[in-house]
Length: 579
Image (cartoon, rainbow, N blue to C red):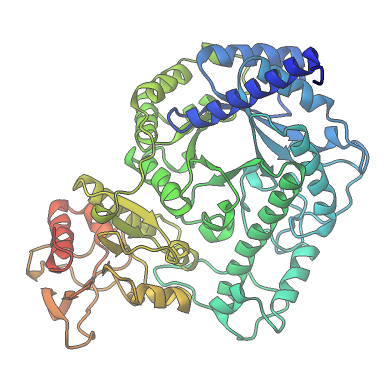
C-alpha cells in the first residue's frame, strides 16, 4: 500500500474547503443582495496599500460584500509585454483577508492609465479633434494586441478567486461613447469595410444595399419626427456593432486567462434622449457573456423625477438581459450638488432594492472621510438589508410584455424626455394596476414568448424597426396591443374629448405627438373610441391599436385612471386572452 503524504493531504483538504466556501458564497449571492463599493485607482485609498487596508476593513465592518477596484494599465504593463501584477495582488489579498469579493475594472485610459509607450489610435470627434481623457480606439487592433493579453494575464491571476471582471474602455467606465466620437482612422476604416459588398447581416438588416458615404455624417437632432435617413440608421447600427465586437474581444481575452471567469457588464442608463449618441442601448448584445449588469443610474437627469423611474430602469435591464442587476449610487458630494434631498435618495434606494437590484456606491473614494462616517451610506445599506427582494422570474401567463423599441430611441433624437415618458409611462400604468410586467425590446423577440399574457408596444412604431423585427411582431402567438403601428404625425390636432368607450383627452403638451386616425386598417377591425372624425381605438382578435400616446397621457392627464381603464379593457376584450 502506497504511503500517503500527510502534508499533501492537508493541502488537498484545504483546497476542497476553499472551493466549497467559494461555491457557497456564489450560491448565497442569489439570496442576498450584493453590496459593493468602488475605489478608483487614481484616488488615495487605492494608491497607498496601508490606506487601502483601512478602507477595506471599514467597509467589511459595514457589511459590504464586494469591492470594485479599477486597475491601471500603465502600472501592470510598464513595458510592452512585461507584466508586473504586484500592485494588484497586494490589494486582492487585502480584500480576501477581509472576506470581500472583488470586481476589477481594467482601466485602459482614465486618470492617465494608458502607458506612455502606447501608439494606437484614440477617439476623435467629427472635426478630428481629440476628446477628454483620450480613450484608445476600441476598433484599433493595436489596442487589443496589448489590452487583450493584459486582461488574460489578470484573469489568470484571479482564477479560482471570487472576482468579477469588466472592461474600462468607455466614457465614465461604462460601455458607451459620450458623443458621436467615432472618427478615428481605425473606426473609419472599419466603417468603410462594412459598407462594401458583401455587407454584414447587421447592416443589411437596417439599410439593405442602399448606397452609403465613405465618411458618415453625425445624425441630426429631431423634433417630433424620426430620422430615417439610411446613413443615420447605418451609422447608429455600426456604432452599436463596434461595442459588441469590443466586448467580445474583452470576453475572449478574460476567458483565455480563466475559462470559468465571471464577467460584469458596466452599463449606463438609456432609453433616453442621448441613446444614439452614447451608443449604449444594446443591453442584450453587450451582456451575452456576462454574469451581471452594473447599472449606472443617470442621477444628473433625475433630481426632479419620481422614485418609480429607478425601479423601471432596473426592470428594463433585468427584463432585456435576463441577468442580475446592481444599482449604482453616485458619490454623496455629487448627489448633493445635483439638488437631491435625503428623503428622495432613500426613496430611490427603496425602489431599486424592491426591484431586486444589488447596491453599489460609486465615486466615494475621493472622500477623506471613511465610509462608516457617511450617514447616507449607512441608511442606504439598511434599506437594502430590510427592503431588498430577490429578482423574481416572470410569472408568465399573468405577465404583460412591455415592448420599448430601441430603434424608436435611436431615430427620435429629441431635446426632451417625452419619448421616455411615452414608453415608460406604460410601466407605471401596469404597475399601478398591479399587473406583472416584463420590459423587453427587439432583441428579445427571438425568445419563446407564447406563455405570456400579452405584449404592449409602447410608442414603438413598427416602421422604425428592421424588417425581421416587424415580421416577428406580426407573428406573435399572443395578444398584441400597440400605441401606433406607423410613424405618427407630430402636433396632431385634437384637443377635445373623445366619444365612445370612454371620455378622455388624447393629447398633452408634454408630447409632440397627439391622436392619430387608425381607420385605415382592414375591415375586420372594430372601433371603440372617436375624436371628431378620427377613430382612435381599433380592435380585432389578437390585436388592439391605441391611436394616441397612452403612456404620456397616463403621466400627465388629470384623470390617469381612465387611460388605465382603456388599457385594461384592451387586455380583456379578446376572449382567447380573457382572465
